[in-house]
Each structure stands twice: as structure tokens, then as C-alpha cells.
Image 1 (cartoon, rainbow, N blue to C red):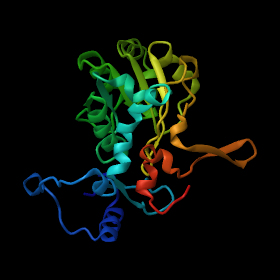
Image 2 (cartoon, rainbow, N blue to C red):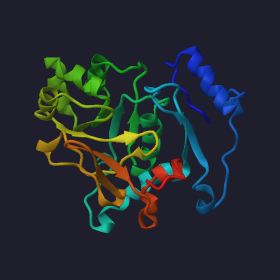
Image 3 (cartoon, helix red, strand yellow):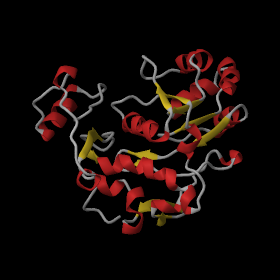
Image 4 (cartoon, rainbow, N blue to C red):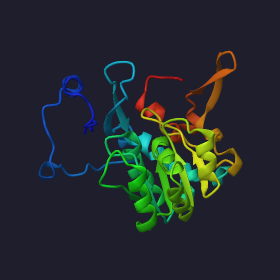
Amino acid sequence: MFYSSPRNRLKVQVALLEKLECDILMTPKQMSDATRGTWEGARKDPYVVMHSSGTTGTPKILILKQGTVAAHDDFQRFTELGGEPWYGHHWTGKRVLTSFPWVHAGGVLLLAWAIYNSFTTVTANEWPLSGAIADHLHVNGNIQEAWYSPSVVQDVARNSTYLENIAKLDDVSYAGGILPADMGNAINARTRLFGTFALTETGIVLGEMPPAEDWGYYRYNNCLGHSFRHFAGDMYELVHTRDEAIEPFQGVFYTLPDAES
């Protein structure tokens, strides 16, 4: 199934549908029965079809596999392997409000993340989510956690009432961009703030909760199979390298089966 953003221009929508050779529009009455089989046989089957952001041209088609999504289940094994719990562990049993819609990889992946880690995903009927609606739900929605784009966090940080109300949450996470230090510090002074990192190709990149004072930094688990390769000057790029020993954690290589790094 292909989920396309309703924000796409008509020309982009048509280009994506033509590239996928889509000619069927699915409605609830047409949903097919779930397939059955072994995990070994199903792990490379499609989970959902997404597209990239399109910042460099027409968006790329990306087919996320069942193995990409199931990695979020394996992340729960960190403690068995001698590591710290991944940040998804902290949301178990709670209600998590998100600004990421179902046409966004963050929203689609959060559904699976919630099933594997036993928490409830909450979305608003308004998108893009505003700070005003987020604040309303913080106060009235029985919300304990939040996973936002930086724009929502900034909306909250700019309003003194919203800032005081966000103290009702156990913690707030953000993904999708950089958060200005002054706004992050304002949130972090009232509730636990931490960043997460995800790509459509990789799914949610497994990491650990950093110390509270390091909310602006990411802390990756060794099971990611990552390294930082020098790019230029004092800049390094995060590189995933295929490793059969940690295959269940490396969802990116289900999405990109021919890649080695």
C-alpha cells in the first residue's frame, strides 16, 4: 500500500502514482485479508510504500519491509545484551501524543512502535499540529509523553502558559530537525526533553536516553552497527554498515537490500 502526502502538488502525486503503476484506490470495503506464513518468509515482504521528502527533486519511492518495522521490536532486547533501554522503553503503558501524520514515516512507524512497546498513540484531528492544539491536549487529553517536530516544540516554548502546562508531561521528544538551544532549555527546565533521529529508509534509529543536560545530543546504541565517517573539516556523517550478527536491528538493509553501507 502506498501512502502519499496530501500536501504534494498534483504533478508530484501523478508522477509518484505513475512510477508505482498504481491504478487502484483502496477503501475500507476493499481491504484484503491479512497474509499468513513464517517470519523468515515474510520479513522481506512490503510493509508500506512511502516517499522521500523531495527536497532534491521528485520524491523517491521507498518500500519499507516487515523487517524494517520489526527492528523496533528487537530494540527491546538492549538490556539483555548489556546495554541501556532504548527510549521507546520509557513510553510503555503511557499515552503518547504525536505531530507526525500517517502519511509521514514517523506516523506509520509509531503505530508499530506502539504495538511492540505497549503504549497508546494519540493524534489530533488538526494537521499540521499547532502549539495551541498541543497545549489543549496536554491539559485535557491525559497525555504523558509527546513526540513532536521541532516546530511544535518551538510553538510551546514561545508561550508562557503552554510552557507551564507542558510540565504535566513526563517527557517530550522531538525529531525532524534542530531545536534552538534557548527553546530547548525552556522545555527541558519543565519536563525531560530529548531528541530522536529517524529516516524513511532506516525507520527510527535506535538510541538511548541521554543525560538530561545533553538533550541536544543523540546517544546511539552499538547494535546499530554505525560509525562516523569524516566528511569535511570537523564534520562527520553517520554511516550504517551491514553486519549479519546484528541484522535484526538494522532495518535500513531491508529497505535497501543491495546496500552494504
